[in-house]
Structures are given as C-alpha cells and as structure tokens.
Image (tube, rainbow, N blue to C red; front, side):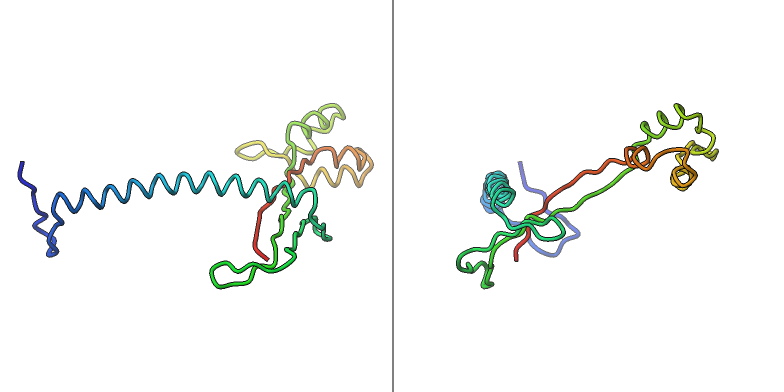
Length: 152
C-alpha cells in the first residue's frame, strides 16, 4: 500500500522505517515515564513517612528535614525537603441540618433561593444568641489535611 503524503505540508514525511523508529522510541519512553512515575511515588512515600516521624515541625505544622550536607540537583544546592501541611475546612451540611432540626432552627439557617443552602452567617448568629453552643457550632465544620513535598 503506498504512503500518502500530506499535500498541505511542505515538509517531506519521514519514511515508514523512520517513523517506525520514532514510534518505537516514543512507546519506550511512555513505558519509562510510567516506571519513573511509580518510582517517584515510592520515593515520595518514603520521604513523607520519614518527615512525618523525624522531621522538625514548625509553627504552621510543616515538617522539615535538613540533610547533613547539601546535595546538588540540576546545578542547584538542595539543603533538604519539607513535608508541607495544608488544611481545608468545610461545613458539614448534614450535621447542620441535624442540629438545626433538633433545635427547631431550620428556618433560621436555611434561606430560600433557587436551591437550598445553609446560611453560615445565621449559624454564627445562632451561636452569638446562645441558641447553639460554640461546641455545637464547631462540630458542624470538618477539616482535612494534605501534605506536599517541596525542595528547600
């Protein structure tokens, strides 16, 4: 079967043999990338576990690991790494509904819009008015923490 050339391109197409070599290299690199990704994950997990147990915790909850001597990577000095902590807090809407229903306050924390949503300002107002306790208000929020490994 003859190879069709792209009439709109001025550059000549490589031969079938040349494109086969290119494809072989590309597919081999795809496999390398997959293996390297798995290896990077294994190394990252080991660093994460080490930092979690042996790293020095700073005021923000990050855990730092300093090497005894800097290492050179890509022409730059790396002194260690940090297991960086980040926290996100979200309102647990099911807990809000349960608490507001139990206290007879659904009409205070639910405002009518095209869809129902919890009025967070109203929750804080309920706590200020003594209708729910600070502990009850705090129990309505959940938090999650994630960590990132960064060079230092």
